[in-house]
Image: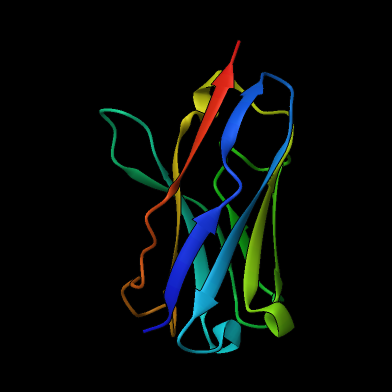
Amino acid sequence: QVELAESGGGLVQAGGSLRLSCVASGRTVSSYHIGWFRQAPGKGRELVAHISPSGGSIYYSPSVRGRFSVSRDNAENTVYLRMDNLKPGDTAVYFCASRLSTLSEFGGWGQGTQVTVSS
C-alpha cells in the first residue's frame, strides 16, 4: 500500500480558500484511486472527493460539490484538494487514502491536516 501524507491545512475565514496536498511515498500513486475524507469533532469520517488513477473519473459529496476540486499530478506523486468558498461547517481534519480499485478498502491513511474555518 502506498503511504500518504497530507499538508496544507490551516485557519481561514469563511469564504476563503485552501489547497491541500496528499503526497505519496513508497510506491507511485499513479496506480491508485485516491479519496479525500474529513472528520469533524464528534462525527464520523466523510468521503468528500474521490479521483481515479487517470483523473478521468471524479466524485464529490453533495456538501462540497461546486466548491471543492480534486486533481492529481502523477509525475509529482501528489493529489490535491482545492477548497474554495469555505464555510464553518467545513472545519475538520482532512485525510487522504488510497485503494487499487473501487471494490477495495481504503488504506495508507496519513495523519491528516486540520482545516479550521472561522465565521
